Every structure is written in structure tokens, then in C-alpha cells.
Amino acid sequence: MFSFFKPESGVQAAKGKVVALMNQKGGVGKTTMAFNLAHAFAHQGKKVLCIDMDPQANFTSLFGTVATDLHIYHLLINSIKELKALHTGTLLSDVLIHTEEHIDLIPAGQELSGFELTIAGINAPRQLILKKFIEKNDLRSQYDVIVIDGPPTLGLLVVNILCATDGVLYPFVPDRFSEQGLKNIQQVVADIADMEITSVPKNLGYIPNLFDTRRKQANDDLEQIKITLGEGIVHEPFTNKVQFGKSLAQRKSVFHYKTVEYKDLQRQFVTMTETVDKELHS
Image (tube, rainbow, N blue to C red; front, side, top):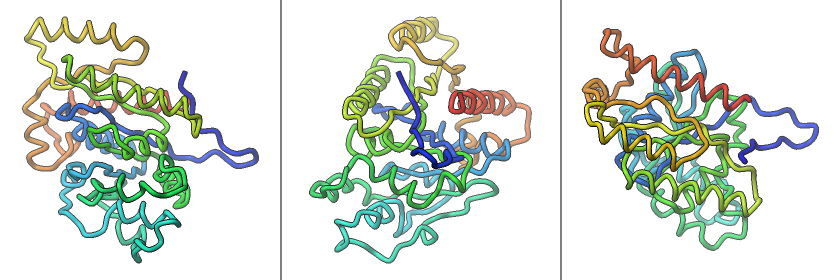
């Protein structure tokens, strides 16, 4: 069902892959997963670009970056010729933040909440703005992996992310509300396929999060959701560990810690990156 973007004839396929973490339901640990996944890739020596596409900018704040006046919104608006009256002198180099070894960040800001309204009147394909921005700046050739954290909505920001990405990971809490959020996002993917404006992203699997192994009902719910989801990889569940809370409070990834209690979380994320890498290159 899913396929990758096809390079134009005679054009060498881009090196880097774009991965997004999506769920319409908030509070499922989407940003936490994106943050640690990026660090897992970096831990393996890959050069990673993180793009925060959520107006709440929680992904940005996890990197210890305070709200900035310039962010992804300005870069996207500047990339649209029809909105020349709104252009600023902002360059990618003005916005790009080198957070640490192997990881760069394009931050988000509150202005993103007005993105849909701002582009409402343009004639260019509104669904492909992010995709064309990535192409125009040749970001795939500069990074091994681009990790995008999306907002818990179903608007044009989400459509732009889905049109720009090679594959999507779907974090969720094993309950009915989160399950419905997954179904809603996947309906948007199906709608993109129907529009035939670009290839649709590959399903890179589902990530059960905040999983309570002590509750029999949690296991039953997860098994039932697996049946409902049908095809697709279900990654090893992440339990609600205190280590997550500690690392997030300090704005550190689980790879920052050398103590034994973080080894299992580190293993899970490394395993996930290996699975994602295999899926993206298969």
C-alpha cells in the first residue's frame, strides 16, 4: 500500500530519510519519542535534523532552546513566492540551531498556529510547502535522518508533514481515545493517496507508550488494539518508567545517562532505529 517518493528520471535518489511521529491524540508521548529517537540515531553516528512543526514548541524546549523570534514558520512563508509581501530576511542559517554533536534543530513558535490561515489564499499546492522547503534547501543530502514532531491536530500542518515524510511512527497509549487518534491520522494518509499529489509515507510502526505491565486490562487492551490496527509493526511497549520523567525534567535524552537503569530504555530506542532504518531502505 505504501511507497516512497520516486526520484525524477536521471536524478540520483536523495541520501537522507524523513521520519515523522504523529497522532491526533495529545498526551501520548509523541514529542518524548521524537526526542529520544533523534538521539538514538545520533548515538549511532548519524547526522540528524529535528524539525518542530508543533506551535506548542515542546520539541524545541526539550533541546533547552527558549522561544525564538525566528523559526520554521518564517522559513516556510519565505519559501512561498505568492506571499512575498510577508517575506522577511530570515535565512535557514538564522534559524538553524546546533544543539549538540550530530543533532541540529529547526525550532517552532506560536506563529505556526496561524499557518493555515496565512496560506489559505495561495494558488500553489498548499499541501507541499514543507516538502518543497526540504527539497529547495537540499536538506536530505546534508542529513542522514530528518525527524519531525507534528502537532496533535488534523489540519494543513499535518498534511504538509505527511506529504514531506518517507515514513511515520505512531506513538499511542493503549486506550480507545488514542486508538481513534491513530485512525484519524491514517484517514488523512488515505486522503493524500486519493489526491495523488505525492507518494504517501510508509507505516513504520506503532509505539505503545505509558504501558502499565501490572494491569491485566492494559495487556488485553493492547492485544485488542493490535487486532484493530491490522498490518504494521508494533514496537516493544514503553512502560511508564521514572527514568523518562527524570530525563525529561532535565531536558536530557535517555542516552545522556550512563547508569544501569537507563540501559533498557537505550536498548529499546536503538532497536527501534534499526527497525526504522531497515524499513526505510527496504
